Image (tube, rainbow, N blue to C red; front, side, top):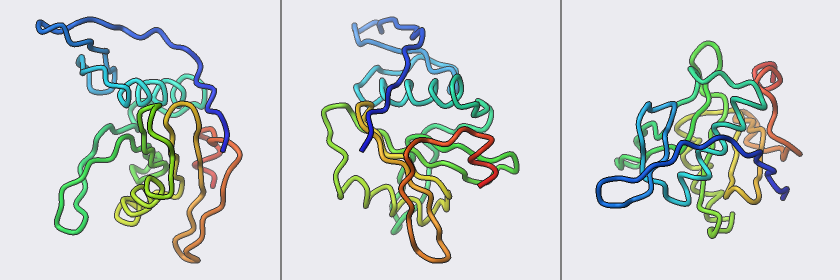
Length: 153
């Protein structure tokens, strides 16, 4: 477990007509409700793009997937230059601990998605793994790899 020292970024905040706090989501190009989980997701997006070199055009937020005949959504998915899954990110609110159940949820989603990298974060701590589907093993990484290193494998 390692503190994910998410650097600050210039969040564009506003309020809805009903006084709900909103944050500008540059990927979806719209304001979204600012929940604790969304705050973590926006920090991770900016960390990946501004500090680790992940191209904005290769990030997908809340992409749908089907698992056991149920429709689910990923929090964040980074793609490689060929458009294949590279890094699956599961975000939780800071008040939600990263437990075995959270890890199981993310690995279950990733069985369908097939990303070789998996990141679980609540904004305070994170776990990152390299997934080897052939040997059915996970190797814990000390840090989230930069895009160029992630693509290289």
